[in-house]
Amino acid sequence: MLKKQRIMSLKKHLYCLYLVVFAALSWAGCTSPETTAMPTLKDAYAGKFRIGTAMNTDQITGTDAASVAVIKEHFNSIVAENCMKSEILQPREGKFDFTLSDQFVEFGTANQQFIVGHTLVWHSQTPSWFFVGEDGRDVSREELIARMKHHITTVVGRYKGKVHAWDVVNEAFEDDGSYRKTKFFTIIGKEYIPLAFEFARTADPNAELYYNDYSMYHEGKRKAVIRLIEEMKSAGLRIDAVGMHGHYTLAYPSLNSFAQSIQQLGAAGVQVMVTELDISVIPSPYEMQGAEISTRFSYTPEKDPYTEGIPDSIAKLQTDRYKDFFKVCLQHQDVVSRITVWGVNDLQSWRNDWPIKGRTDYPLLFDRKNQPKPVMEELVRLASQYTVNPG
Ligand code: G3I
Image 1: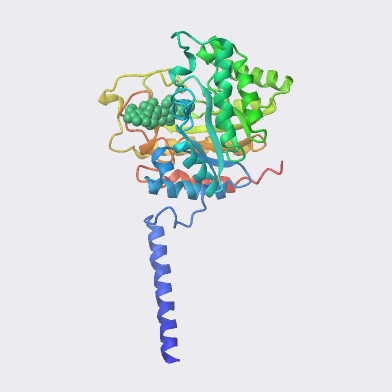
Image 2 (image 1 turned 120 degrees about the vertical axis):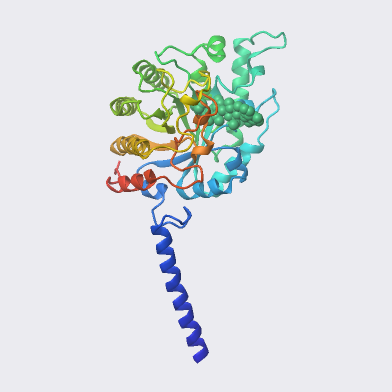
């Protein structure tokens, strides 16, 4: 009996010691993201809107275990950064490769996340065979429609009931609102967009269907997208949401134009999402905004000022920018249904390589070692200041 009491007392002492050490470590910021007392981002925003991230290959395969832990802890929605693009899924005509996309979908299913498929129709990362006939010339309109239909039907059909939503068409408009002169447009005409949506709807009538683009704060592009929504709705076609990419900087876009985009798109009768949020802190080498991936500049050390880290003043500016964008979304919970960041940590971000290859940028919510930046705590606190919108 005495021995049992001694063991109990020892256990109690050990538990107290554990609590003291844990509190000290937490206070010093030394605990891993999984053990901190801070509510997770997804819990903080539960009932308000979903919090998502893009996953790269190392995360999907589990090679990068540290980021995988962060994804499970903080995000209730995932999107594939690259592995569901057509050049990966169908590199040769009729030869589909679902190796990575299957793993991606299994991950989201196992972790009860809202899975977004990205992207069915995009001019970039579409394999070149898609547009070319045996004679080496552009295929006919009928043939391209048939190829698009086969691709969409096969991909959406495979993940029917598992992938909850699709970025059906990506970046179809120029900033001035004119149609981007992609092969889809020049061969099929503007009908390729409603056709793609219809093929996706037929393949999985329950999946949500989105139009996704950058620079929605440009009036011309925004108006063109609103016109598209109106045309599709009046034709009885399904379009559930518009995704605004969100590849931003400390300077653009203005909060007013961001809020205006949400209001006007929402008023057109769709949900609005920020689908690829990242905020670059490196001065932009040019005046152009957006995310046009074909735009490239050469590297010089002056254009890469923060190789050893960012000054506190810049980190603070970025924190404020993140808070401002989240705040606007909280104020528009009636139409905003998701914010997805384009990656987990600064090391993996595409912005290190665009528009100049090899720079050191800091655009995301976690640092290069997967530690949460101070902005995380601020975003959690911000969410608590807003009640859940009953609508
Ligand atoms: O996988 C190959 C690898 O085998 C090869 O050795 C290496 C050499 O450069 O390239 C690797 O592929 C790269 C791929 O990302 C995977 O890392 C491509 O070069 C690179 O171009 C590609 O970039 C992706 C880009 O889309 C391509 O268009 C970015 O990761 C991805 O973040 C970016 O995402 C897009 C969205 O889909 C649509 N909206 C804009 C956004 C940013 O451009």
